[in-house]
Amino acid sequence: MRAWLRVLLLVLALSLSGVAGVEVLRARLEQSGALRASLEGVARVQLGIVLRPGSIRVGFLPAGIRLRDASLELPGNARLVLGDVHIALDLGALLEGEARLQGLSISGPARLVVRELALDGDLDVDLRPGEGPHAWSLRADARLATGGTFAVLGGLADGGWFEGTVDLDGVAVEPFAVFLTSDRGEHPRLRGRYDGTFELPPVGGTLATLRLTSEAAEIRVGQAALVGPVALVAQLPVSLSSSDHGARFEIDATRARVEYAGGLVRGSGDGASLGGRIVRDLDGHLRLEEVGLKVTRFEGEARRRGGDAG
Image (tube, rainbow, N blue to C red; front, side, top):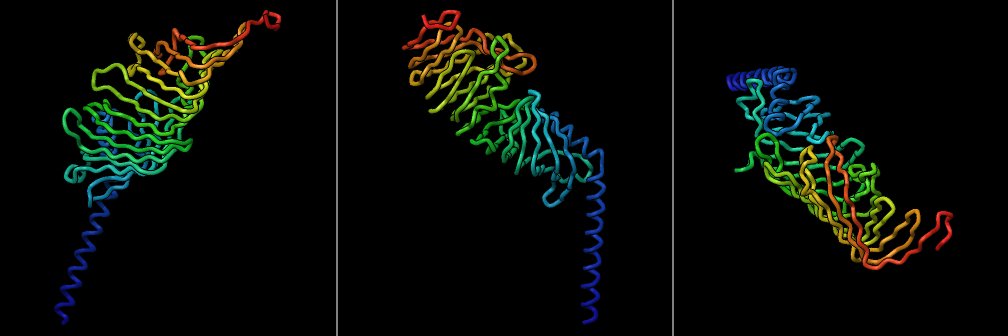
């Protein structure tokens, strides 16, 4: 009996010794500047993003790390502040202090900051090795605090170029008006919830396609406004260049009401279309040029400069 007890105590001692060794190794890796630098380098080269890891917690079964207070710096001067982040790594490389990425998942509250815009919501992301032509397969779902959801499905090529589709459901459009300016430097006023898709091109493509519909929209550009059901199709430049003259937008508002309140003319009508060119400035803003409004039926009045109707 005593022999069995001695064996049991020996096994327990060896187990405790092994646990202590694992904890020492874990602490060494978590404090390692080499592991942090390797992780940041992998994110930059393979995913095309700048990762600010925050604090790192290492795990071995399965092999990976959890990040706290992490953030991503994305193309287009965007910053994504993240919730819980888990990165799956190759165990052999991890034991050597090197991050060899095998997958990434994100869950919980997140904030997207793009210049004047800040969006809060809950985010779930799953990134896994993909199949040609994509190095990585990406799926993401976001529920915005302002209302509506995004669903992202597609893949990343080497270097981080994303090709895929973003589905929008009931997204409040008002916060996004800061990205649009007229040739006079004015922001349009946007209201309503929209459904639609945003399609990003494969590597080498220059234009993304945005399709949106709303049954209760309000779009005010300059002195004109469209109120009611609308359908929009827009080609958006994906690079910081205004040389692509094929970028245009068209808004079908044949079931909407048109309002106009110019300096000398005021009136309203039913049924219209709105279109023009889209140019992306070097600061990332989208500028509307050559905007034209066509109205099916319009009734108005001309006003003299003194303000009386004529």
